[in-house]
Image (cartoon, rainbow, N blue to C red):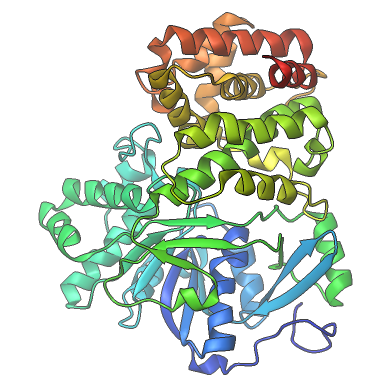
Length: 490
């Protein structure tokens, strides 16, 4: 168990008065990314700028058994974050967590009541794209999602993230408390707009007057977050124990790089995040698109094709010259032209991403990145493909990426071994795979998913032909050779 005693020399520990912190942010989704990103930012502010902004960490989903939350409680709300680089590592202990709750142990009413504490000014979220109960192709609420159907019938016992937030907004309004802002930190374009859509649309179905209140009083600032945070493994936990001299089941590892761009639109105040390295801007969208398409888009390309090729980690992919070239070519030739960023050196940005991918101290598994593909493809690849179709330009690597995803969700790798598909639409994917023959029919079946590809892309002859051609390359040559052929083609 982590304590502040006998930690290695050089470990940064909270030397500020933790009793002076107040729960001013309630965060939903106590995952590894949040622990290594937003919470670290708050810890820097407390340590270096006397900030009193503390967190209540919450897990609201029905299947979470509270292992992390309970471990955090046993450690006096402390955990470690270790930055990993080829040149060495550095560790800090984060101390800004004041409370920690989970649905199955504390009850959803306790979580909602905590969100209604007068000091709470922000509710932030990291629950991955699937937690918003929205259609990635449209950005709209999935009204027949099982959790949404439940919340419409039982609004005081919500299961979905939009439902939990809405219940807290209603309770605060009825109690005459000030409104809070709702800040998504998940990888979605205009994530604030998505969050506003799903919360407001749910409110419309329950109480139109509440929807009007939200429009008038609640803000949903968009953000762009960037830091590579691999999932912790048994090997990583053992190494962390060796480093710290004690176990830390809540500890995380991450790369040194950190970026956070935030739309400065908060109704009840905010921390001075800019003092801890964040950028406060009027419009996050250009930054979001740059990151989603160049970083996340190339990550997904490497994840699907790299996994098929037998590469376990992104850094393994970087040792294959064709995969390295494919990642950089995708960024600069097929993603950069679609962006709306200004005064950004995209070549330097691409080169910095490649350098980050080559960091062998970060064991970022291709399988981890390949999860939840139906939620990720629209913003990482498909919007760019639409741009190329409208502009008559080439998108060979994007098409190969889509083909790689189709090959991956077929559930069998190139050695005939099963792939466990982790996706909220896994049952539908399995049905489409089982009902279609290998080859062109498989491609046609998967492209029929309108919630992913919309109505337009399946109707595009050029799009279908390019994906079918890329898929046939994968079947004939395998992922390694297919990637090499595509990046060396004229």
